[in-house]
Image (cartoon, rainbow, N blue to C red; front, side, top):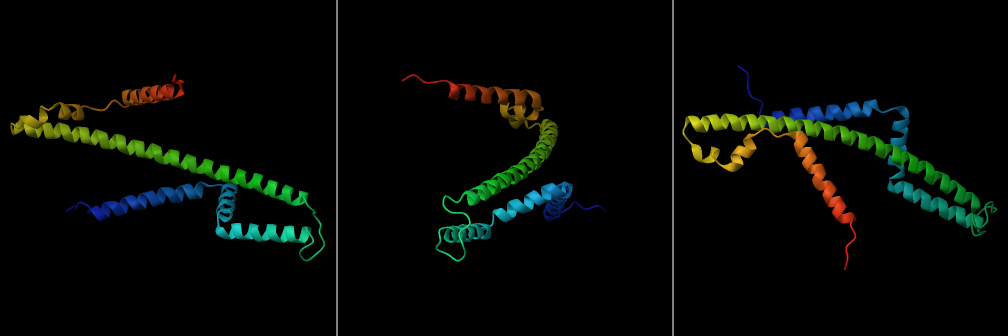
Length: 182
């Protein structure tokens, strides 16, 4: 006899499915993407900040004659400026590449969310239709005759809904862009 999975079983199944999707996304990354992610993670650590503080302090001390060794990059520290600028450029590129990939992953998850939500809406519309039939059979007319019930029981036109949303967003953007006279 088949049994209905418990809430924890269904939740466990959902967690496994999400973990599987995330693992797939991780495996799809190229070597360059993995390297970029590793560099981004390393750069975001507190130890990286500490390393840079020590590096800059030693560099400045050595090159102002206050530390050990002979100055090799006197003030205004042109070599240090060049190295730090190159580091900033490459780090920015790695961060942008990682953010771009994360945005693509988020877009894919958003599409999945949309599909699940549309399916849930269709299921709820069907359940409301079934509930309406049960109420009619039991001669319970008050709930099913309400305007709210009738609206919810009709199938949602996603295209029309998207157009309405776009029109409202567009009008709100236009209203913010118009100068006000005082």
